[in-house]
Amino acid sequence: MNAKKTVVRHGLAGGGFVTLLLAGMFVVALGVPTTLSMLGVVSWLVLAGATMLVAGLRERVTIGSRTVGWPRVAAVAIAMIAVGWGTISLAALVEGDGITGLGAFEVVLTAGMVGYFAWFARECWVGGGRIDEETFAVD
Image (cartoon, rainbow, N blue to C red; front, side, top):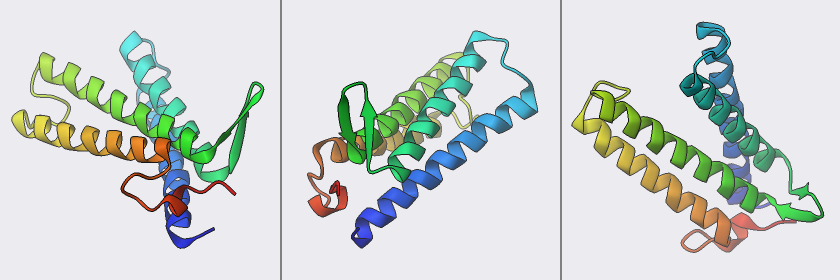
């Protein structure tokens, strides 16, 4: 495994672990989700975190009769993060000042982060457009 691939895979594993930890902290702090919105947030975090963790730890994943390489799994996980973040932030902004209470700055922050995550998900899916192809090699 080359150095760039190692960094990306470790980042995915660490990000997945932290995302799962965040979901657990929501449940510990707020109790078992009883509202549909809270159930959605916790489910989103668990699904995205578990998918990132799998992409970081497994070279290939068998889904049904197909085998999928870790870059495609990572692309799905990162896309889930992008869509979830954008959805939650947009919903919060429609209701008031957003999650952070920063109003217009949150719009800029969300657009930047969702754009970055969407770009990185695409890089993972195609196996490197701007990033070196060796980074996304499946051994």
